[in-house]
Image (cartoon, rainbow, N blue to C red):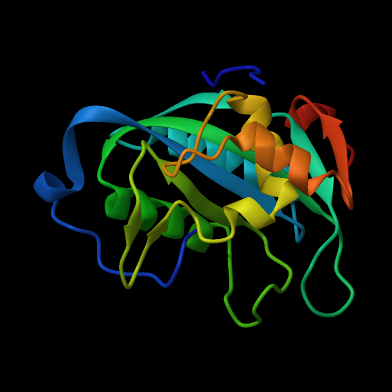
Length: 193
């Protein structure tokens, strides 16, 4: 059963690493942003959280309140529903990225238009205090500090959290403000369709 309430960027798909290499010795804490504005938004988000919680080596420990945000992509799009989950994991960062990309694909995510409407968008925001940049993954997420629809639910979930460079997430929240963002509800079930 998922946690009721408590106040990581998936890039191009790649081959999953061998099981032995995909696991770490101890549990790490990761934060994953979730968003959707196409199709069965609440259903896709709910199924994704359940699948992430059921995945080997992953345990969803907290789910943020939900926010509605204006789409920043091209054309006329519905508003997004956004949240963040905390995940305890024994997976490596790249193995967790592979899992997130597989969940996006299972939800029908298409990458045809940059910032286009999405059935599901999953971003690996943070993985412990790791700072990483390679051809597949950048941690912290490279646009985390620019997106209030990520920072607000992240700060609700972990108000004292600091990025690897020492920046307080609460300070990012204050600097970004809530423009274009609406606090919706604590749970998906309470959100309007």
